[in-house]
Image 1 (tube, rainbow over the protein chains, first blue to last red):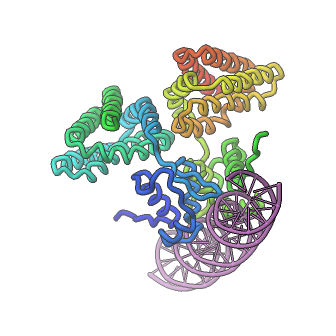
Image 2 (tube, each protein chain N blue to C red):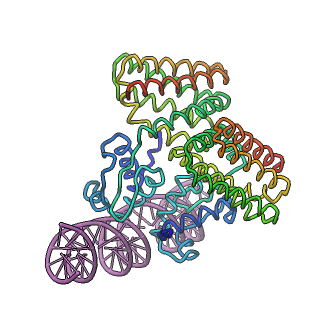
Image 3 (cartoon, rainbow over the protein chains, first blue to last red):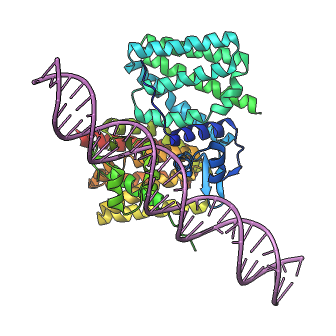
Length: 214
Length: 214
DNA sequence: TACTGTATAATTGTATACAGAAACACAAAA
DNA sequence: TTTTGTGTTTCTGTATACAATTATACAGTA
């Protein structure tokens, strides 16, 4: 049976605030106070402050004597994120291809298959979840905690925008088949191909997103 | 006059612990407790915990019911860090070349000149400081907070190893002249050249470091 | 010997009280 | 009208008390 690690309040608060900021629940420019969060979340200031320190480090909020400013992710940030991912995400796929176990390969395949399933069901929220999981598994399976730590925050920050992306049926379907192609390259342990396909996949995601934001 | 922002205890504790971990003052594998840090640092647990949460997020420590495990930076991490920097640090130089002001250019030149001065004086600690400052200024002047946030932690984590590097006179002198070349490309607003020279500079640093660690 | 149960100690997790600094509102004076 | 001063409020910063969980030592037992 799987152990279900109980998260501390501080971690729960962090996860919730991070999600709410990245999904746009809080407006960019909005100002909160710790006391307001105490009221909203029903926990004391201590875990809230610990969460805020981490959000501040990720530049999702700025804390001053005026309160907590929601910074979030701008369009400029998004462009920069894709430019960076374009340069290093292929490296993660390469490493994963070379190092991942059969069990990990199976987990990745399952994610691809689920994504394809949800595409046929047109379930946007689930598609997005599997989309995220695919990329995050590759970061993990790369075996490099540095790559993981570098790519993970970048990927998380694209969340709000990817949400819109998967609502476009043709893009959702294209994305799923690109994931399958990457998976199959990995299954064949073809690191060069996996890297190349990953770079193309990021580029396609970038292009699609920029088309939409015009 | 420049405002001198007073750092909170939590920030001071973070800076100190981060430095001590990255410089090797704390041994990798060592286990601390919050109470021990209270004794060592003379502040209460609250600011210490806030600092620890941030260090945990950077994977410099791991916190469990046993205490605070010092994780630090491994040789594998270092290799990964250089592989990543090789791919994106040139991008930062390119952006900086295109966007930085005359005032910022002046600040960069001053850093290069100081580094050259300390090379003639064989002052390793000051050389390392100017070396760090050069790179960090470029991150800042790139105008991309995402690039800054991505590169800064990677660069910081190389600190301990760079320390050894600059004690080698020929490498210290080579590094300074590479910095000057990058600066001059930027001054001429030649982004392609600045990018190319930066990539070569990172590659040289990587090669030199790997030679030493054998 | 190896294992298990239990009491104790050590450590982190959380709430709260208080201190200090900054923002704010408002009145008085130029 | 603008500015300046001042008292008040609001907010974050810090310390500390207490709760809950986990590790540890040790005795008892198969």
